[in-house]
Amino acid sequence: MEYKIGIVEWSFPFPGPYGLKIAAGLGIQGMELDFGDYETGYKLYNRQVQQAYLECGQEYGVTFPSMALNALNAHGMSKDRNSADGMIAIETIQKGLETAQAMDIHVVQLPSFDNGDIRTEEDFYNTCEKVRFACDLAEGTGIVIAMENVLDAEQTKKMIQEVGSSCLKVFYDTQNYYLDRGYSQSDILDALAEHVAQIHVKDGYNRTISSALLGKGDVSFLKTAEVIRRTRCTEWLLLENYYNRRPLSLLNEDAFELIRRDVDTLRKLFT
Image 1 (spheres, rainbow, N blue to C red):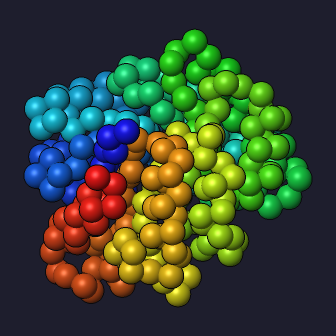
Image 2: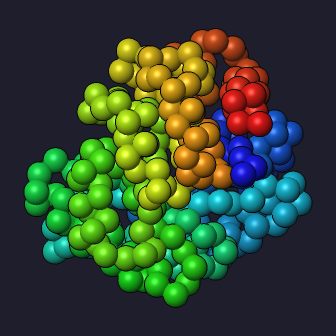
C-alpha cells in the first residue's frame, strides 16, 4: 500500500482554496475539508465556494479525501432529535451529504466531541439514530460515513452493530483516545483496524491536544504507527496538529516549517 499524506483544513495555518497551493508545496497530497458552521450557513454548502475548492484542488494537485461535519461538535448527535441541537444535527448531516456528493468526496466524518460527547446510554442511542440517518442517506452513493468519537473498542463495535450499515466506518485519531479517556492508542487501533476509514495523526503532551510534533509527545505515537503499518488499515494519514497555536507554535514562528517536519516524519515512517 502507498500511504498518502494529507492535512485537515482546521489545523492548516492558511485555510481556504488558495491555501491548497501552499499545502502542495509542503508535500501535502490531500486536505480534509470542514463543511462549516450552522450559524454561518455551512460555507461548503455554497456552490460557488465548492467550485473554488475544486478548481484550486485540480490546479495544485491536492485532492479531498474526506469532509468533516464539525458543526456536530456544537450541535451534537447525542441530543434528542426533537431538541434544537438534534434538529440542527439532522440538517447538518443532510446538507453535508448533499455537498459531499456534489464535490465527489467519498468519506464524510461525523465527530462526537464537546456538545456531542457520548457519556450516557441515552447519548449513545441518540448518536446511533443520527449515524443511521447518515448511512441511509449515503446508501448507494459510494460515500462512507466515518464516525469519530472516544468510545472504547467494545462500545464502538456495539455502535457499528446497532447502526447496521455497510456504509459505516471509524475515523481513528492517534491522540484523542488517550487524551479524553486514558486508553491505549495502539490497543484501540489494533481492535478496530478492520473498521477504519482514515486516520487523523497528531501528538501531544501533558493532556494538551495537538501540542507536539509527531513522535515527540506522550501518546506513544510511534507504537501506533507500527500498528498502522502492520494492519494497513488506511491509505490516508491526515495531519491534525495545531501548528499555529501554542504550545506547538513556540517551536518555530513559521508554522509551515513545523508542517514540513511532520510530513518528513510520516515519509520516514511510512515508506
